[in-house]
Amino acid sequence: MKILFTFPGQGSQSPGMLQRLPGTELAQAREVLGHEVETLDSADALRHTRAVQLCLLIAGVAWARELARRGVAADIVSGLSIGAYPAAVIAGALDFTDALTLVALRGDLMEQAYPQGYGLTAIMGLTLPQVEALLQGSGAYIANLNAETQIVIAGSDEAMASVGQKAQAAGASKVKRLDVSVPSHCELLAAPAQKLAQAFARVKVNRPGCAYLSGSTGRVLWQPEKIADDLAMNMARTVRWQEAVIAANEREARLAIEMPPGGVLTCLTRQAQWEGEALSLERSGVDVALHLARRLKA
Image (tube, rainbow, N blue to C red):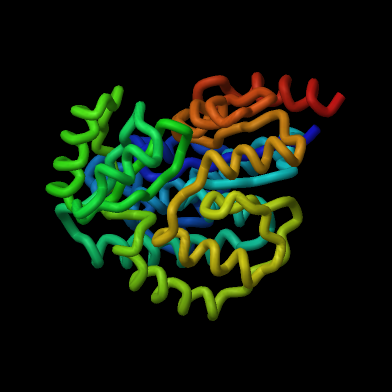
């Protein structure tokens, strides 16, 4: 039986999330990013995509490495959107220093492309065909397929609001504007993704030491060039989280540990035909994760 580490995407961030991190990752980030790190997790900074994504990278790597120091290593890693970057670092495919530089650029490219008036909205209670019908002619796009009836759309505020109203009229149980300020995971970000791909050409990506499971394709990737493509282009590709979880389950992963912050992926994992245990490290604590991991491997 295997252990899956999952890494959340934007929307899970909160002010102060880098306080009391284990390990030396924050100090390493300071060497790369300078004084920016001092206020990176402030409420003001977290209004910007660059800061949010850097915080999620640093926190994810720090907590996953802490588990490794405590004897719990991942057999499979997977991240949602920006979460793919700490997943790649933990898998050994990407150096943490390179990841910091690339994520800073990623955030800048995304925010510069759409500085305001765009984002993501979650629609719960409707199926994919129902949501696709509502999107016709709206100017909004499918962004995330998180669960059978949890679908995220991307686009302008006006387009998403219009689709959201139609979704509620069609019987959606909930429509929620997410705390994300860019229209991720659709063709609106194709041009920034291509610019990021050019930056990857100057970075060494390695064959991972454990299975790197793409949140965009639901497939395990081993070849460095395919992992580089997945990381660079995932901002413009639909997130297929449900497929990724099903793939991990098929590979006999039976414990999913979500790295801080938050617990959204844990809820989504439990909805995706998951046959094992799933926990949020932030909510359940390290000791519970250690206990479940030892029991699984006994």
